Length: 267
Image (cartoon, rainbow, N blue to C red):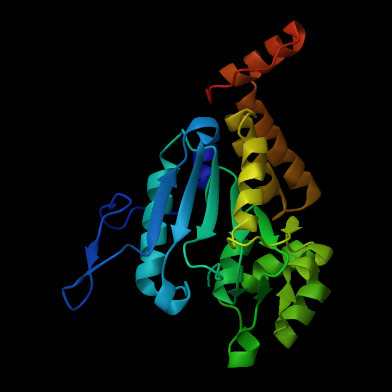
């Protein structure tokens, strides 16, 4: 059930490991626009997708999107990944997916149009208070076309989403938190990565929890929001039943009885 409900992306061409260089159309080498990093030590289980398209301020170009899909497809098969962070390698810019583990967008800079739409596709969003975000497509003669018209109403409600899309209004991180668009807004630091650090702290809170239960909880919420309450309860029941026979569920109950921290292994 988990595999069927969360499958969406496929590997379109061979994955290049982080740090590799590919060739541009003129034959010159260029850095990948999407880089993947697995954290170690106490952050083991957290993976990062780093968006690095500085000349286009991380706009969603064809190569950028292709490399992003490749990265997600590769990470999807890695059961060691418990939380996925999206962050920018371009200072002052965020950007502008479906993924089974929790995803967090760290918005330290500008996230306009497609950038905010990518953040909306994440489960959780953390922004610097000085970050600027908005679905500004109507100011360019367009409308949001990467999920904005569907995800923003689900996040904020229909009337407020319409107001923001119709006006193309830009919001600061503080304003976005007040509306419920981001989970946390933090004061920016001198390095320009305050949201990234807060996102890592949030990921660290998720890491110790049972990974299968977390993933199935995500499925139940995401699919349940798309249907009526009765159908949603049925989806929850299916996910709950899948979690019952897991080794982690038995470990959680044993740890509770023995008054000790559980040791979840994702099985």
